[in-house]
Image 1 (cartoon, rainbow, N blue to C red):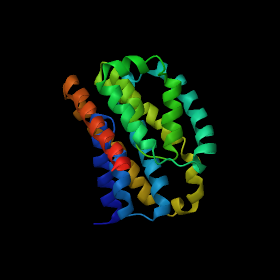
Image 2: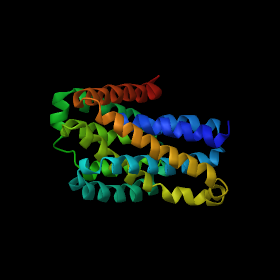
Image 3: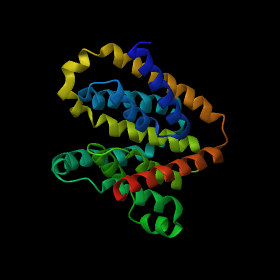
Image 4: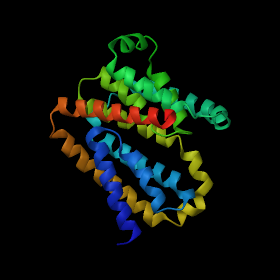
Length: 238
């Protein structure tokens, strides 16, 4: 089986997972890509595939996107790219996953913390942190997802709006792609296969999600976010 077909299938499956629960597919994909790709191609191909996955997932649930949140997140993202891109590339980020993990756990499971932090939380800040940190560390999508899960009642609203946020965050990585433009052009066929797989996976995942009761998906999101947060903490502490 050719590399293109294998990565098409992997892209489809990881995108379908994200289509059902709203995240996780991108993390699985970037863990698998080093087996198949030149290191210089991993970030741009992963980023472009994730733009296809998140944007198509958003389109397939377009009526559920909370567009009122877009301007706040977008403005925060612009500042995040500028400031984090300028500062954090020369600053150690070892403990960032620890901070994100603790924040997610407390936000999901501590009513006192959730009530306290709500006074300071805004989608300007979430956009700033998710997109800015996304330039230098992985797994920042759950930042906004944990807030949306707390504030919205519909699984479809949560996942569609999160997809819109993550599309913005991945688009912010486009300047990184410029460094390997020549190599990307020589791998256009592979990229097209992966983008097609991501879009088809989003379609399948969305159909599966619509068939599952709302409370089951929201509980699954909370459990998976919790496991991810524990892993992020353990990687730093252990």
